Length: 318
Ligand code: UDP
Ligand code: MG
Image 1 (cartoon, helix red, strand yellow):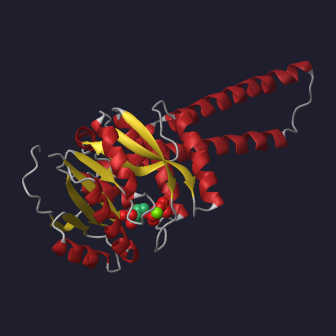
Image 2 (cartoon, helix red, strand yellow):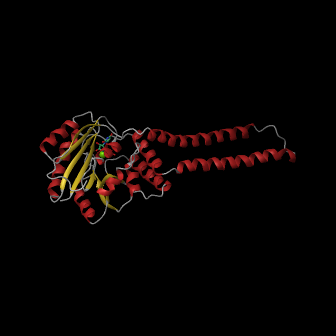
């Protein structure tokens, strides 16, 4: 019997957990020929999330949970879960039921057909603001332009991953993570299925714009050093123009052009070069910051408690 782990990162999700569990139980009933594990990662919630999960785990032996020592963010919560997957496949799903669990049997079917990464692509995004939809669209466009790896547009982290993809992702240990970038980078046979993204059932979104910007920047920097090249290209072009202009200034007196004024052109050049330098420094700094963070080699997360589901028999593969 093959085993499947459903990974659910949860941060302050107490109001939705009951409904989520109901849907998960239904899911379990619809795929009886697989051994299921529901692996919750409590990402330092400040509400009753952990307590509710603990109560559920007492009643349902399919439930495992990892309690992180504080809030690390969804990206880290996911890798914490991924590190603890022992099953043949993994499904990552949001706790707020924006990703319908009813899609999972279809994912499993495609997995059985030989696909390693079955991801759900959003057809609509109800309950999200116009601004969020717009920025997300532009971001994907930019990301696709600066990288050579194909990127799945309008997909979240809701997907089924085969064991070998899980093992590959476990080897990506960067601390500033962008799961979407990593899913794209590992490759394997990908397959998309379309779905309508529902509004959140209860509670509120944990994503603020600063968090999203952070994720967006790490998406680009984890894929490519193209912005660094952009900085040096810009520097070269501007230096060349400046060089030509200086030659022109030097030659000018020989043709009787009166010199001496030139304050405005001087200012223009200084300000322009200053701007380009700051831009380049900023981009370089972005990468140096990342080097700094990665070289610290800190653990990605700390676990306060780990409870493992009591599966009937040990997984046949490790
Ligand atoms: N989440 C998390 N840690 C965080 C923020 C979010 O584990 O610091 C989880 C959250 O509980 C949910 C999922 O990540 O299961 C998606 O979060 P949310 O619904 O707030 O994001 P959105 O759907 O608005 O993009
Ligand atoms: Mg959500």
